[in-house]
Length: 429
Ligand code: AMP
Ligand code: GLY
Image (tube, rainbow, N blue to C red; front, top):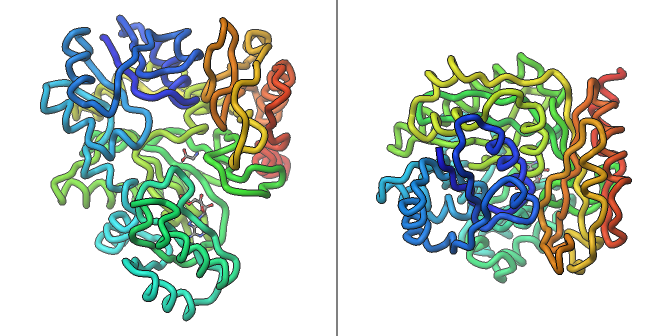
């Protein structure tokens, strides 16, 4: 098979690394890719916002499957437009991508299908939103309705913070994404990331993972795209997985099929495990970053047949013949970010030692925001590397990942030193 992977982050490097190992692969292309992805794929300079150009490339290169990494092209309808040109793609349609593209869409679906989630209201103007917030007890959560690159959510510990977040949204801080605002109750519990592959009818759960969203040790500091992750997530017992499938995932897939927008691709449920069971915080319609890096490290079987089957609506058959087979060994990834992230940061610092880190037992460095300058890898984004390792225990995976981090010479970078702390605590208790 010829495959085109869309995206350029650590998630896509992990997917490329895994797809490149498939016996079914002929050529892997990536658009736009990054220097890490270029080690396992042909990176091509395609404007992914130009859907017709992507389709023409696929025809010319006889691409059998397009795998879409990030949410923006999905919400923009890339998969629909490729389908119109007869090109198969892994990922949801424009309408099904609304599960991530609009928080209000998902909340309305939860109400309709009886899916447990925080109580919420949506507002199109500041006066009504402020009046609602005035009448609610803090803490509460204020969210821009649309895609805001992970920055549209404020967990407001006080009423004043909530009012300020409402004003920011309606003042245009998040652009069009903030034209309407969802205000919801604060949920207490432990968060987990839960992924299923879906083909519109069948859902296949993947192993569990958990990420660390806060920038600093002890889960303090501002929210980020994710500073590290590990798999499995001890909080997600088998019983909780079954409950999540029955109460959240299956009703969602059934409701989407009923709406005429069957969900195909990977559905990522952000969950809060509360005292009364799992509740949906949000859906994403793509793999998590950096959770994908640890999932791919634990996947011992071929990924490509599963992605292909999900795209073609034959996932049940593929699951019987093609796994997935997961290693029992945990995996853990540490994100190295540019100093200052998620605020302002500098680009361009040289990064050395990736090869040394890769050579360590069980370790693999996935590249995210990197670029090549005069033959040298330099930092080119906020989250720059995902230093990942597998081990016989979570403690070994953690020790190996940090050994690999310490092999990397990048003075302008930083990372958390406590990724996996919760899993280590639960293991030893
Ligand atoms: P979201 O983009 O909706 O996943 O929100 C980003 C982060 O904000 C989540 O990962 C949670 O840590 C937090 N969050 C969002 N909604 C809630 C909620 N209702 N209660 C508590 N925390 C929340
Ligand atoms: N790890 C969080 C995300 O991918 O959105």
